[in-house]
Every structure is written in C-alpha cells, then in structure tokens.
Image 1 (tube, rainbow, N blue to C red):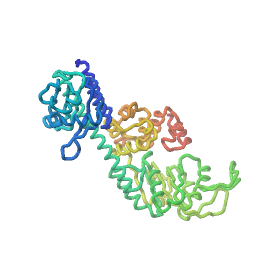
Image 2 (image 1 turned 135 degrees about the vertical axis):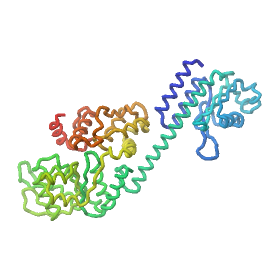
Image 3 (image 1 turned 90 degrees about the vertical axis):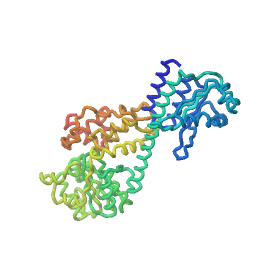
Image 4 (image 1 turned 180 degrees about the horizontal axis):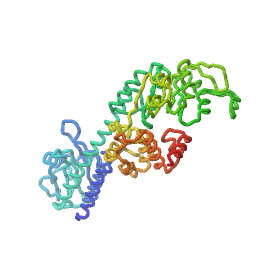
Length: 489
C-alpha cells in the first residue's frame, strides 16, 4: 500500500473520531476503511463483552455469511485469542501453505489465502480486534502493512472508546431527565442543579394549596413553565389556566382584558365581553411581568385578591370569582415598592410565596440536560436524524453565558438542528456569539441590558423576522415592536 493511501486512510479514521459518536455506524465505517485501503475481500470487527467473562462478540461484518463467520471463529484459539492476549497483530501471507493453519478446516473449506488480525487496544487493555482475509489473493498482507495497520487500529480504538463514552453520557443524561420527571412530575422543567431542586421542593409544597405565588427571575428563565406546573399538578388542574402578558397593552385595553366590559361602554365595545378573571374562575390566572402594571390597574387587582370581586368596564354589577393568582416579573418588586411605582399592599398579597428562578449562567450544569431535551423533542431533529452533540458543542454550550437564558438556549438548539450538516451537532452549528464580553456572567449588566441583548440576538438569528422572534421570546409582536423602537435595534 502506498504511503499516500496510508495517510489518507488515517486522516479518514481521525475524522470519524469527531464526526461519528454512535458505536454501530462507527464500527461499520472502520471496517469499510480497512477493507478498502488494504484491499481485503472479507472481514469483521469483534469487541469484548461488558461482562467479566472476557468473551467477545462480532459486532459487524462484510461479505461473510453466518456459516462462514462460524468457520472463521474456529481459528480463535490460534489467531484471534493470540491477538487479544498478546496485543500484537498477526499477518498470514499464504494460509494454505502455512504449517500453523494449513490443516485448519475453515482454511481449506473457505480457501482462505491471506489473513490479517489486529488488536484494538486502549492503554494496554484489549477491547477487541479487526479480522480481514482474502480468498483470491495470496501474500496480500505483508510486513510493509504493519505500520499502517498498527496506527489504524490505535485510531479506531480511540474512536470506539470515545463513542462508547459519549453514548454512556447521553444515556445517563436521559436517565437523569427521566428521573427528575418521575420524581417531580414536571415534564417540561429540566434541571438537577441545587437551585432547581430547591424550586422543585417549593413547587411540590404549594401544589394543593390556594396560596398566591410570585415568581421572580430574568426573562427566559421559565417562569411560565413553573406557573403551569403549579396549576396542572395541583388541585385546580381540572379548571382553566389563563395567562396574560401585562406589559403589552395600554390601561384601557388591559382593564377590558382582565375584567371584561359592557356593550357600548367605549368605542368598539359592540358586545358584552367576559374578562379573563371570569374565564379563569375556579382555576389559575398567570399574570406575567406584573411589575409593568400601572397604579390604577394595581388597585383594581388588589380588590380581586382581597374580596374575590370584579366589575366589568361600564357596569356596576359585582361578580364573584375564585381564582388563584400566580404572578411573574423580571424586576425586583421590592425595588419598585421603594421607588413608589408598585403598591406595597399589593406586593405583600402577591408575595406570599416567592420563587426565584436562577439565570442559566448560574446553573451551567443543567445546560447539557436542557440541550438534549430540546433536541429530543424537536420534530425537525427526528426528520433530519440528528443523533446528538459533539463533545466540543456541549463544552461551548456550557461555557456560554446565556443572556437570554433557557429561551435563548432553545432557540440556539433549534437553529443548530437546521444548520447541522451531519447527524451530530458540532460547535460551528451553534453559531454562538464570540464577541460578547463575559461581564454578563459577573452581573455587571442591568436586567434591561440583558433583555435588550436577548432581543437583538434573537432577531439577528432569525434575520429580523419579528413574528418568529416574538414566538421564540414568548412575547407579543406589539411588545417587541415597542422595544425595537425604544432600543433602536
């Protein structure tokens, strides 16, 4: 074999270390390269079983039927076992005339002319072997092939060990996700960090009560998921769950959305309308970004919390409602109270139980779990047969500071699925920004600046498509247009 062919083959197997992370396709590729470069006619790869009996099993073969493989394995006492025990390759130039093998039944029946058997070793530990032979050519494998065969086998063994490690980690990640979901029953809330375990504990304690809950945290940390988990796993789960983003509407429209209106009470009120509080009667009402409410709406909301009563706009009739309030904000309500922009009495009614959602940068250990979760639930990933992430991609995801938090991570994974050229997502597919300073992780930016960056990065990733960006960020188009204008993005 020419030196150029050897270099090409070694380069190819080296690429496989970084591109094939599943053992079965990797074994097939290793055997394909070996047969092609060494011009062998048949072959198989066997690996040690995981048990302690030191047995081995053929994992993939080429141009061999089951009976032929059975015959060849009769050579194990003199060839394969020797390779596995000694860790040295064996080349048989002319099997028919070699006194060691000429009387072997399989050699005679199958007319084997040349044999090459090379060990797969990791740190002096034999994990398997590659067997190749030829039935039409004698002296096919010579001592000149030994340097290539040895280097090739070393590369193949490293590739297999990496694939085995990756599959083990992937299975462990999935097992941990399943365990979290089994214990807590919150299928969409992924995390095993100390912070998330604390949140799971609080949520589990408040499920069957009617106590109001305040959820604080940066945009994109999953506040609505927590609200839905509280409702759908609690005693009110058979009744409605209603949600409203409080920062997207002017007071007049917001009041109508919350409390309803009477026909003719204002221009455009062409019919009586039920408000969201009435629609949520018996269930849960999630008020997102409650810190954006004006003092006027705050006073009306306080009446609902204190008396369980509402009045539709333009109507004097008092209606009773039984609604559990779960509210959320990306601001510190205590700071707004100090500034005089949020009612203190309303704050204490809402803040009976407070859940603080940690930013993703403070629970980087959950990033791989979340990334695999978003990949597993993506129809596009299944359609394109995306199997997982290269280790370098996971490292990049874990190192990034995620100013847009979990929402930005999900958007990044969905984009990478579309951009991936192979069945494994690589670092380049993620297209993570590399020019943002790391001071976001150190807390040197305001929440408003973090929000602005999340909006800008999402718009950049979606080529400025406001509708798609609003869906990804889980905000209204009106709110997004307002922020774009305010920040001059």
